[in-house]
Image (cartoon, rainbow, N blue to C red):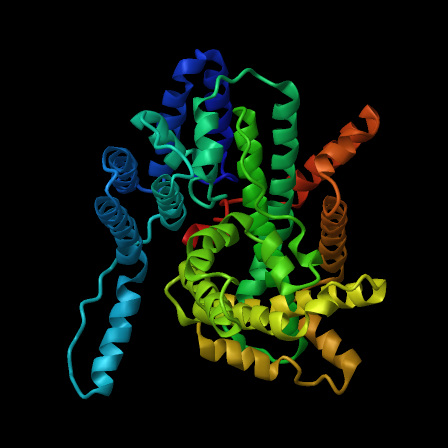
Length: 479
């Protein structure tokens, strides 16, 4: 079920109404059944998959309490992680690593056909397995206590607003809220509705509109040269941000309707002045997950420089691979890892400078770097990405013709330029204000008339400028 579908427009109000009519002690039951219904709409058989991951991680937490012996606890931890990662590996990476293995054998002169499975990737499998594993590791470390109530733990793993694309929640934040006695808070609910509206604005008005232009170029990059390749790449940078942060806004806003606060997942990332800062603002739940469960256990920055840089590279390569079984994602992660190493080696003082012009230039450079890296992320192959990089400046010696032909080849009319440009500027204003304060709270401090006028206009923009017809999936559903 998609957040931008008619089914969700019916599902959410019904669950909301029933939730607040129920006795508080039984609301977890509704959340659990609603979450499984929500997830199984994308494929009934995948309900069994999330149930298995839930049972394994729940049992691991309970067994940690039973066994104080270090060896047994390590064995339980290893077994639970093996099962959870096994689920991810089978559905997401089996064919990818099978192809690599077969290529190695062919290089050695061994002719062997490796089995290829026709597997459909379950929606959100990487998100709920990582959420479950983090809970297991936290209980193992003693950072949190195991949840004894299986039903409430299952509601934590499957909580529908953030089930399929995050934020990847931690047990010490979400589980206590599942157990908490809630009373309806009108202010919190209205905050959630306003945040959801911003999410729909990002997804329907910007991301979905730009996606058609991006897909047209990246499905056949060899058919284009020049500025159109840069334009499509910048469009993708905006598309993926609006698509994914839009999902997060809708998820966080939806959770607030039920009295639950989820962690912030995006915080104006394209205003970052360094790659390190970018990753503290982009997909925060995943970047902090890799920090806490990969980077720090490897030694983080508490080791020698060479080892520190190796830890950075391993973490970012793993992050790239998490996004999908394709060399393009690994290259994208590697590029960001190299950038982090370079910043640590050469640019620490520059990043901390308070000179206004230098800070603006750093922001522009970081955005340009992100656009460059996104080329690998969105390309169908490494070859396509290299072609785009090699041909994106063809014709730049004649700047006006270069720009004019870029827009013409993308069939991007003047009216669309004005509309999309205005919408992006509104988003930029929203993000700029969000750097220092919560925008929703900031606008709430204005007069009631201004507030209502602002949100009515925003709602009308969403209604009239969004694409009509079949609801488009969110990009991160594939991960």
